[in-house]
Length: 416
Image (cartoon, rainbow, N blue to C red; front, top):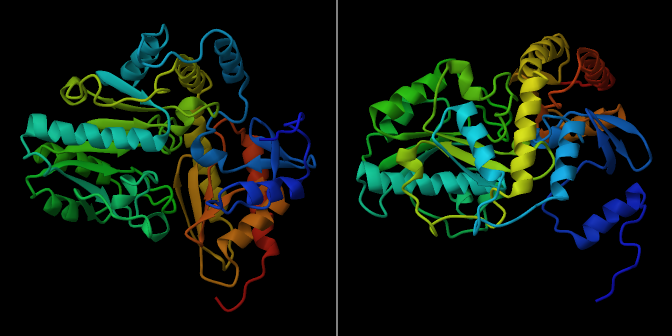
């Protein structure tokens, strides 16, 4: 094995992209920009050009890049204690669990690392509850999911995905799932007639599907049906939580308390991967020692950063920012009259523009936005997501809206 003495060195954009293409897996198709530095709502490429970050690492950077409070917490804790494993207690995990459970109103927290790990944790908890509490016959539990969902890409999760790119060629798939249309309470109630159903897993806003917003009353209707049929309501708030939609949790828009909440992404403040499942004792305590875990889950470094991320979110009123500036963003976008724009939708600072079919794709628009100093990303070809850090100011938001407006004005479309 050979390694150069200077492992970390300056590389230009072309070399950086070539290195990734040569030595990395080709499981992403990034925009042609190489980010070398970030601060607040801004990132800079290897040539020093500044951009507004309007993806925020798929909502993991709600606090912005390198927030000073989070950097200081990370640095300080990294010099004291980073990892113990769960073979021993540590002095920070319990404190973090207390903060999480009291803030969100649950008895217990189970901390993991990635969002997908937390989803898998919730699925296991739901099945165990189904057998131990609801009395479902062993190995017969069914979990209902929504079509066009995105909960991760593990082999278990893709078993109930309807996205061909995530699913095809990775079988055989796991049984025990039933799919219903999103935002369809009638279909959901019909699915609940099956006595083997133990849970309904859904995103309050479907992010990867294109920021799909359900009808008013849908989340409350889900809660009522789950209560009626003794089914666990599991809200995947990995993207929508931590203030992204203008409330601390998206379900708060309808004053609903799910049986389980899954959080991730912004929980780690953009510093490191942290996720958690929150639920009450009746659900959580069915899993006993040795039946589930993670070497890094609940490590002291993650616990310290998580507590700081939560306190920063509250102290700086980032949830309120998201609500106020989200309304303003949609007003500005809706005022753009362009034949390419079909729909503007969103909640808080979780928004999307849906494009009409044309020779100009969502990717093309994102490249043009990049050239004008704003980074966003398309999904499903014709939807562009806009999700800036929640620390954005009113002045910065207006400048970004100007950039988006300018970009569309530069695109000439005919025959739509």
